[in-house]
Image (cartoon, rainbow, N blue to C red; front, side, top):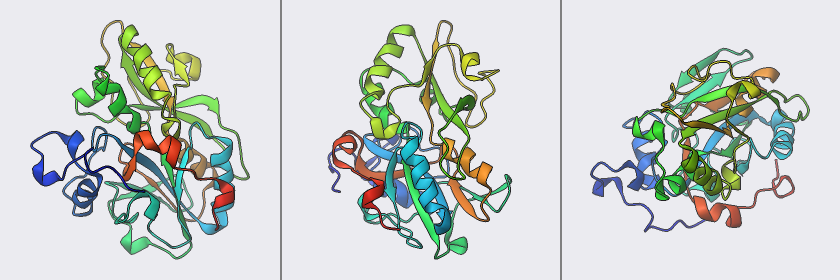
Length: 287
């Protein structure tokens, strides 16, 4: 899929505006180890993706898990076994090197954090790329609404909830949400803008009291950074692509890989075009 070159510029022409970095330039920085942090705010206008990499024996069940939970697991790309790229998401994209951080699970809930998968890549691995809420943040900020975590240069806070996903085969677990806080009027605008991006989780799943969805202390997220909240703010919660990570932990496959929360794959797909142009269905994928 061709992405408009006018949306972002090469990193060589950027002063300090991270939103203007082109996806290809950002992936080059990540690949070389020059960018290792969160991708929130980077390459504005392009679709970002969460990552789940599983052995081929688990791929069919996980695909069905995504199909049954499209709010938290909107599938935007899937590889063939052993192939470390998905050309539809980026011509030069390499799954093994182009995310700032990965988590490797080996049959337990413990994991190893790495920045490169080249040495552990296997011929039986199938990659799933799932839409990310970072993709609609640009639309929110273009409307004049500030995002507090971006202004503070923090990762978005994420929480495990008491909301259950729909099981598929061996995969099951709780819904994970990301939270952004707003003044009441800005919250309404953020909700309306995010609803357009169905492949990036779409509209929120909860607004207001965090205890209603099982969050005991909003200042202590399970993933990401502590939130920045002003007096009178309303917390707004979106489905989060860390949800599959919880499902994978419940299955405990011998070998699995996910992204580090907040450290995403930045694709060449325009975020606004994705809803209308990117069609990935279980029937269209051959494993």
